[in-house]
Length: 139
Image (cartoon, rainbow, N blue to C red; front, side, top):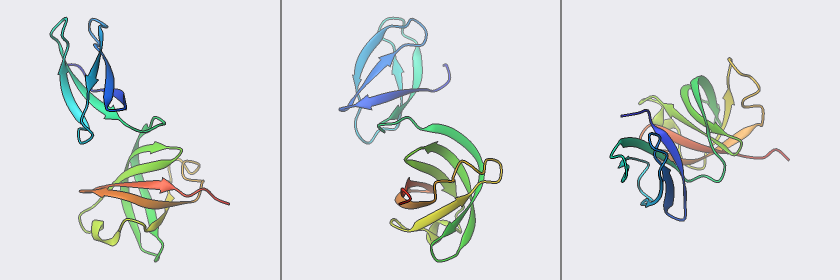
């Protein structure tokens, strides 16, 4: 099986393109599915697929960042992905209870200081240890 390939989902369907034979087909994708294996109907090869439902593509970023909550708590997080509109990251078990949906965050990234130069973010979703935050545009 090849590495994971990302496909964009529009109106509940992904345009699957086999990385081996280049055959294309439209595949229905449920709104709850983030990853799935798909077998090509022509060459029978299996491909591991991730599905992106965002309007803009997210950039995979990996590294340690420090975040500060609106009440002054500081903690370490593992960056997972970044887009101009938001960020996805993982936090440790002891820190997950310190963050809630709607809470404002500021990030500090020592290895790329310009990455989070846009200011504050607000938490939009929490799934397990993965947190999604949206960029609050500075006025």
